[in-house]
Length: 385
Image (cartoon, rainbow, N blue to C red):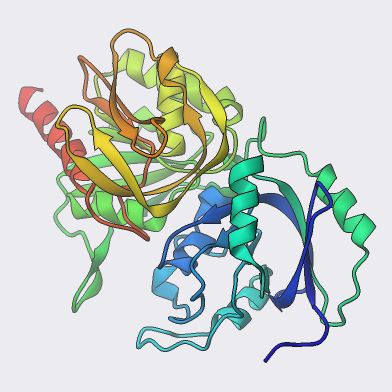
C-alpha cells in the first residue's frame, strides 16, 4: 500500500530528487549511479565486487521475488552501495529462498529505495552519464536536502580510484568448488589437471567455479601480489579477475606484475573484465571512462574471428580503447550495441581476455567456451613442454 510520507530520498549532484520508500539499512551513502537491465540475479549483482562504489538501478521491476540464499552470493557480503527499484520488493516465492531481501540488506548494511520511476532515472543516466548521488533512508522521512545534494557533489567519482585493494582477499587461498549442478549442487574438483594462479581484483565466486569445472586447481592471490609470488606457485596458467574502479589506478601495481610474467614466461593468461583491461594496459593500450557503461545480461557481442554473436553478461564502466592496441595484439570481440572493444588476444601467444562475463552469474552461458579455451592452452603447453 502507498505511504503518505516518503522514507527514502535519492539526490543527484545536479539537484534532481527522487523520493520513495526505503528498505534495508537506514542512514546515508554516496556513490556513482548506474542501471542494470538483467531480469534475474539481483543477489549476484549486489554481491559482485565490480559494483564497489556504485548504486544499482534495476530496470526490471520484480526484485525480491525469489528471495536470497547463501549459494548465490558472489562474495561474502553485498558490495554495491545500494539499490533502486520501481516496486517495493515482494515476498519471495521460490524453493531456494532462505531469507527475504529486505532483512538481508538491513543486516548487511545496504540501503534500498523503492517506488522510484526507474524508467525516467535510466533515461537520465543514458543521456547525462552516470551521475554522482546520495541515497538516504530515514523511517521518519526527515531529510536535509541541501546536505544530500552537497554530499552527492562531493563524491570524487571512479576516475583515478583504485578499488581493487578494497575488495581483494586479505591472503591467498585455494579454490576447488565447481559450478552448480543438479542434484549435487556445488561439487568439489577432485581430479584437477592444471595449476592456476588467479589474481583477485574482486573475483566473483562463479568465475572461480568455472575455472575449477574445466580442471583447474585454483590458488587465489591478492591483487597486490608480485610476479615472483605468482611464479612461486609454478602455475600452468595465470588468470586475471574482474573488479571495480579505474583500471589505470589499479594498473599502477598490477601492470608491472603482468608485464613481468609476460616477459619471463610463455604461460597462458586469461583475463575477464578488469583483468581484460589490466592485460590491455600491460600490452601498451589505454582505457577510457564510458558515458554510462554496460550493465546487464543481454548484451550482444560479435566474435570477429568466427562471425558468431554471443549474448553476454556485462558490468563495466571503463573500456579498452581499441585504437590504441599495439601491433601483435588482435581485437577479437566487439559490442554490437556501440562497437566498443570486448576482447583481445596476442597473435603469437596463448594470452587473451574479454570485457564481458562468461561465467554467466547472472546471464546466458554462450561464452563458457572461453574457460575451455584457457584449459586447452594449458594442455597444449604441457604437451610441448
